[in-house]
Every structure is written in structure tokens, then in C-alpha cells.
Amino acid sequence: MKQKIQDAQRYLQEMGADGWLLYDFHLSNPLAHLFLEISPKKHVTRRFFYWIPVEGEPVRFVHAIESDVLDAWPGEKRVFLSWQSLHEGLKKILSGAKRIAMEYSPNNAIPYISKVDAGTVELIRSFGVEVVSSGPFLLRFTSVLTQEQGESHVRAGKALDQIANEAWEWIRVKLQAGEPFGEYEVQQQMMRGFEKLGLESDSPPIVGVNAHSADPHYVPSKERSSPIRRGDFILIDLWGKEKRPGAIYADIARVGVAAAAPTAKQQEIFSIVRAAQKEAIALVRKRFAEKKALHGWEVDDAARNVIRKAGYCDFFIHRTGHNIDVDVHGSGTHMDNLEMHDVRPVLPSTCFSVEPGIYLPKEFGVRLETDVYIHSDGRIEIACGEQDEIVALV
Image 1 (cartoon, rainbow, N blue to C red):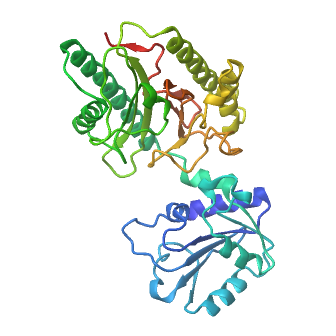
Image 2: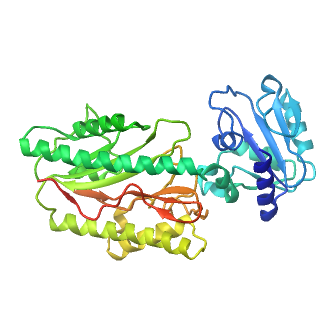
Image 3: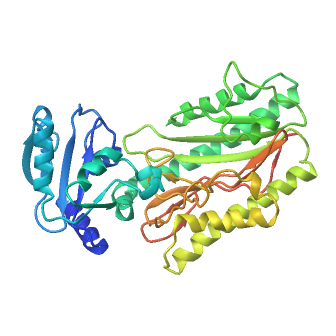
């Protein structure tokens, strides 16, 4: 804990801030809970603040009912009860501070770090304090993986690769036997693979046939499932992690055809998407090999420019990739210059997806997703494989 505070103070000094005010109410700021290592089992229903000044000792500012919530952390404890004592106490804590960091994003540019409500920001500003974003350094505490966590991601990636390959083989056997089946049955087959390999997920895999593959978030269910027949185009997307605390997700997407070979158009779209994915990964490898800075928006641009030049940019309707941690969509740097301009750096010991796609409404969609894990020494590892050809299932 002492080391984390010292690191935070160093980052505050670098950005010219007088301190960092961590705030939460009813888990409105899970990033504060993550930094402060508050157990998910702990019952927290009142506002709390943890003030880390750029120099000196922190201050714990907590409600009388839950005055123990920050007892594990160093610093003077101050207790409030009424709203008046809260306001007065905050004013005293921040006395002399002119510029403080909070989980705030100007103009909500990066929603993943915009966790402090507007009213609380207004309150802090009323004390004559400028509020700036903790985003430039926050991900160093919330998104950097331990070696064991990185290894758990690698294992999960290899397991997902196996589950996907087994799903293709299961489909092939069904097609050869002429047995009826559909999207839902393929999804459930993959879920059996999850159970066999000891993975868990926050939701079942995506299986989309034909036009459904052109809907990035289509998910079949028992009540909504299309049959899969010869000649169909199929997209699968699956994500999971090991069943242990702190385990890190892996997330992949693949495509196949229930035919001896894809059509010319299917092959064209696949080749463009694959080229875009390779270009994005190549940029990551190049920057880390050269030990140069890399930002999320740059990775998105690398992939998007390939698709733009091919004339399909209007059909690439989501970001190139997302941060991955204990959640499949983590709070760290995203490979995004579409939905948001992510200026945050891509750091060693982090993990993210690279998943460009082209979606042709009422026809089919191609999304190729793999994950990039950057080791602490800058080495790049792709544990869950890359798809170079459309899987032919007949």
C-alpha cells in the first residue's frame, strides 16, 4: 500500500496535480474500489473519500456508519455524519489544493474512467479547485497484470482456441450426417467445452449464421435460433477465463462456411479484415520493439485505414479492440479512434483484443478477433491464435 501511494504521488508530480481524491458511493466508482483493494464482499453503502496529496500523508474521510471502510490504508482518519460536516470536512482537506485528479473525463471523452458524478465534481469545484482526469495514470493501477494473471490469460486463450476448433469439427460431423441443428446447439456445444476445460464466462458465446453474423452483438438463445445448413456462412465469438480469483479473460472470434469453399465475396471481405488485423498487430510489435510510445487510437487507425482504402469503412462499425482484464471489457486502454479518441498509452503487462470487422447488412459479417498480451519486458504474445483462412466445413 505504501508503494502504491508513493507511485501515485510520483504520477501526480509528473502531471502537475496537487493530489488525487478517490471517491465512491454505492460502488459508483469501481476503479476506486480496485485501487483501494476493497473486497467485493464488503458492504459499502455510504460515501467515502481517500485523499492522496502530492506530498505528505493521505487522509481517510469516511461516514460514521462505515468508518472502518478504509482502515487498511494509511493516513489520518476523519469522520463525517451530516451533509454539512461532509462539505466542511472536504473543504478543509482540500485547503491549499488548486488542481486535483479524480475519475473524471472531460466531455465524457472516455466513459470507462468517467466514474465521478457531475454533482460531486461541482461540489469540489465550489472549493476553488480545478478537477482534472486521473486517466493518464489510473490504468497503471487498474489494468497492469501480474505475471500470474498474464499466464492465466495465456491458458484461457489456448483453451478458447481448442473449444473453437472442436466446435468447427462438431458442425462438420453434423453436416455430414445430415442431422438438423442450429445456432443455439453450436453455442451449447461450446459451453460444454467451457465446462470441460474449467472456464467461466459472463455470458454465452455468439453464434451467427448468414445475416446474423452481420449483427456484431447478435446472440442466439433457445427461443431465438436459426438453423445451420449447407452453404451457410457462420461466425462464432467466445470469451472466458479460468475459475479462480484474479483470472484474466481471453476473447476470440472466427468464421467458417458450411461449404467446400467460401464465395468470392466472402473471401474478399475476409482477406480485407485479416489484412487490417495484421496491420494493427504489426504496429504494436514495431512500437514495442523500438521502445516507442503507442496509444490506443493509433492501433485503431492502423486497422481502420486498411478497411477504408478497400472501400468498406462504413461497414466497420465498432472499435478495433478493447482492454481485457478480470472483465472481458476492461477499463484500460482501448484500441479506439471511432467510438472515442483513446489517447491513453498501451502499456507493458496489459492485454487487449484486436478485432476488426466488416458487416454487410442482410448478407454476412466477418469479425476476426485475437488477443495481444504484452509481457513486462515488451514481448508480444498471441496465445489464442490467428485465423488465416475461412474454415471450410464440407
